[in-house]
Amino acid sequence: GQSLEQPSEVTAVEGAIVQINCTYQTSGFYGLSWYQQHDGGAPTFLSYNALDGLEETGRFSSFLSRSDSYGYLLLQELQMKDSASYFCAVGSGGYQKVTFGTGTKLQVIP
Amino acid sequence: ETGVTQTPRHLVMGMTNKKSLKCEQHLGHNAMYWYKQSAKKPLELMFVYSLEERVENNSVPSRFSPECPNSSHLFLHLHTLQPEDSALYLCASSQDRADRTNTEAFFGQGTRLTVV
Image (cartoon, rainbow over all chains, first blue to last red):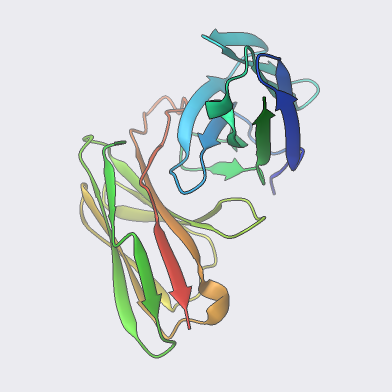
């Protein structure tokens, strides 16, 4: 089976940096994805890592260590609009075998 | 807008009712999915359709019945549901590739279902 662990809640100050960790157990691992979901909204894709290392997209970066079965999402220069839930997801072949974590609720405070 | 539209946005139904959720994608994708999202639980994959064939059914009770008449439309038919089935039901689509590399999924806004 597949399982993922991430913190349930994180609070950070506007303008700061926050890191959301994700550890996983899976067979046939292909890559780690991150999604953002605002309250009442649809999950939206943020990033994908298939290889070890850091992927940067604007203020958001995502890191993967396959040997440690670990990844994280790094959000820089936090803005109030970044308050949302963030889900990590592991894929084991195309999108069809994607398993999501329970999500981390990020609250950005002034 | 994500290119994936779900209707209705909200639904209240009794345990003896029959209703259907509808999903339409305008992205030309070849795969569509139904997910269930309950409070404090991970997104649960229910059904996967690839090229209009069901390829995944994660032990979902038979009171949930999916239908995919074409690559752009997906339905979830509901009958004799239980109160514990109350949740947000999300539809998603993606373009799966033969090389098995990941492609991002595009989600609809979901249908908030309440079973009374």
